[in-house]
Image 1 (cartoon, rainbow, N blue to C red):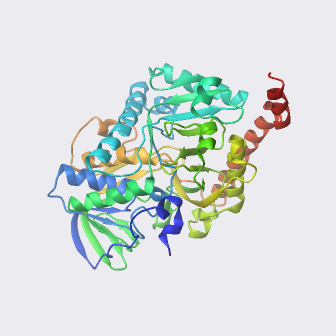
Image 2: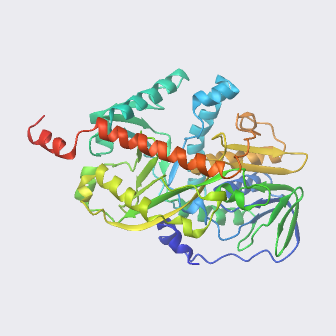
Image 3: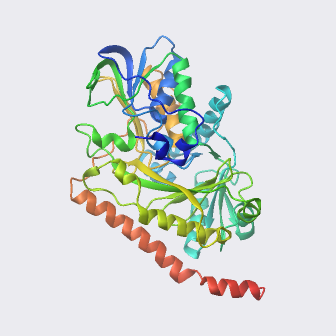
Length: 458
C-alpha cells in the first residue's frame, strides 16, 4: 500500500511515510491507546504532558494519520454533531452552553499547541462562512443564528450575513446571505497529525505501527504480535470501531469523499474570495465543506456515498466515481470561474463514525479501566483535542470543568441489526439528497435566467 495515495494531504507531506516498528511482543504499560489518529494522539500528548512518569503506548494498524485524521477537510472547528437545543433537551441549558464554550476554547487550544510545538500545518484563523443560496437555506441560516442568540451567543460567535457580506467572503454563484463564525481554523490535517505523533514521541510515548489490535478487554489490548497489559485501555478508533469484536453496532462508518483542484490562478481567486482562507459550506441538507489550501487549491468534500451493508470498511470503498463526479459538478455550480471541466487532480475518501443518537461522547469506566472517545460525525479535528484533554483528566482522576461536560460518559444506543441499519441509513441519504434537489429546482432560477438578469442590470 502506498500511503501517499490515500489523500491529497498525505501526498503532499515532506516526509517519507515509513511505518514505525511494530509491537515486538508482550509488554506492560500504564495506558495503552488503540488508534494513532487525532483522538489517540491528543490523549497521549496531554497524558504525557500532565504526568511524564506514565508509561503510554499507542497501537496503530497502519500508520499515524492513516484514517480520518489524514483525509479530512482540514476544519479545526467548534462544530458538534448535537445541536445546542438537542444538548439542552438532554442535559439542560447550562450544560449545552458549557459544551459550546468548551468547543470555542478548543480551537484556540489547538492553536496554542501548534505554536508551542512549532508545528507547520498551514494553520490559518479564517473562521467559517456558511452560504445560503436558496430561500430555504436562508431560512436555516436565520434559524441557526436565532438558536445561538437564545443560548446567549452574540454576533461575535455567529453572525448573520446579507448577500453582499457573504459574497465578499466567498464569491459563490447565487449567494443570498449566510452565516459567519470566527471559531474555526484551516489546517493541513496530515501535517498536523504526523507532527503530533512526533511530539508525543518526544514526550516519551511509544508508538507501534503495523500493529493490528484484534481485541480490547479490561486490562489488555491484544494483537497477533503480543498483548499490551495496562490498567487503562483507550479505544480511539472512530469509523474503524466496527472492525473490533463486539463493537459492530457501536458506530456506523459513513464515508465522506473529497476532491482537490490544481492550484488556481490569481484571477480565479479574485472571483472566489476566501482571502482569509475561511473554510466554507452552505446550508443544504447533505453536507458539503471546503477550504482554500496554502498552495492555492480548492479542497472540497461532501457526504453522499452509500452506507455499506454490515458496517463494512475497506480501501475499495474510499473511492466512489459517482460521488466524485457530483463533487466536481457542485464546485462548478458554486464557482463558474472554474469552467465546465473543474480541474481536479486528487480524489479520495474514508469513513467517519456516527453514533445511533448522533451524539459524540468521551468516557472512562474506572472499574474496568476502559476508556473511549468518538462519534464525531466528521467534526473531529477540534473535538478530538477536547476529547484528549478530557480523557487525560478522567484517567488521572482529576475533576475539572472538562470532566463535567455533558458528553462525558454518555452512552449511545447501538445501531439496529442488519438489514434495518442499511435500509435506514441509505433511505435517510436519499431523502436529504432529494430535498436538496427539490429546493434547487423550485427556488433557484435557471443559469440562463440569472445570466439574462445580470445582462439587464437587474
